[in-house]
Image 1 (cartoon, rainbow, N blue to C red):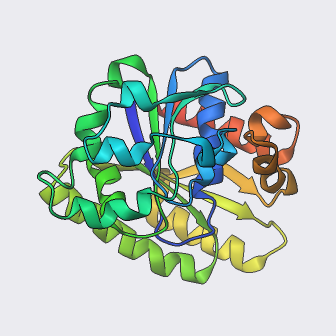
Image 2: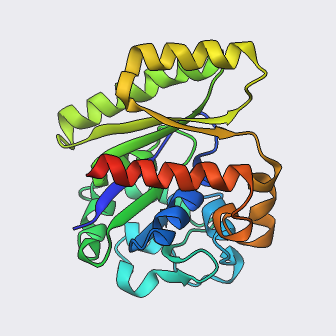
Image 3: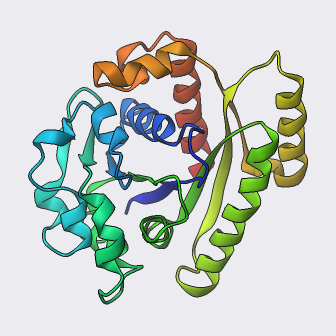
Length: 254
């Protein structure tokens, strides 16, 4: 049975998609069977996996609305080494259309239940909001991986996300836990970054991943080549950090 991880933070620009595609590729390099679900209408994880969102006939939108099965909609992201349930801009409409559907918060969980035996890991790239799409991801997942920058506003947003996770656990998904906090875009020359990093470690302890993802231009460039940095330039500092994160995720899983 797959271990299902939602990569979530309602704050934009913290490295959710970069983390999703590179962790998925890192786990695939370690020999794991991986499925990445792109749940963001911007579809950056789809493009970053080497799949053209403009040429897709069916996407995660059809999965959520019950118009298609994951088995017929998933594609192989050959450049990345994992399977992908892709997205495109149609997904933006799902927010409105889901409201009147039965089991609106649990539709992704039901869909993934049909394929979870096919994978070791299922990663869900969430949109930068605490929306119905994100709630679907939190209901489907066992754990939440939270990427965040070490800055003041990140701490403010973190408390909102932790509150949402607690509400989902209390009402919709009692198994949901925080897998860990990942410090991204880390600049060791920045005093504030060190201070926030220390606060996170004091408050969350072992929930903070040891891996630090640095600011790295290769991580930013990789999507334009349609591949995660882990497969496009494995020697780069950013790729090495995500390979280390994959090892840490596997080690914690026991």
